[in-house]
Length: 93
Image (cartoon, rainbow, N blue to C red; front, top):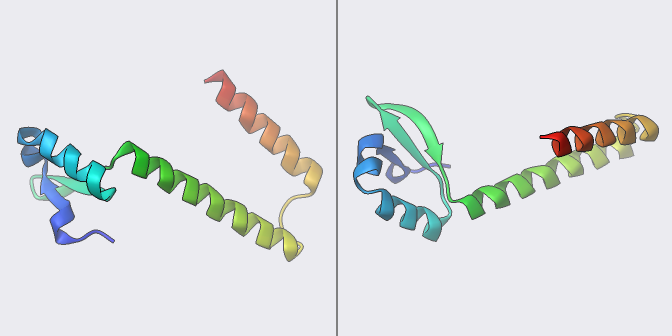
């Protein structure tokens, strides 16, 4: 959850980018940057973002395994076919 200290104006980030980047690297927490008082973008340290993606992937896999245990989801052949297609698409990028 974002705290009020994690919300900052974009103009402050532009003026003090090094300070913000240092803080992002140290805390691993994201910051919300505002434009005209409204949330516009979220920035985060690359390592923390990578960890977040890994956790999301693990959660998705866990949910898929739980669904399979309940007899839900795709047949194995179809799941592997989909996984192969996604892998090929990623390699083409």
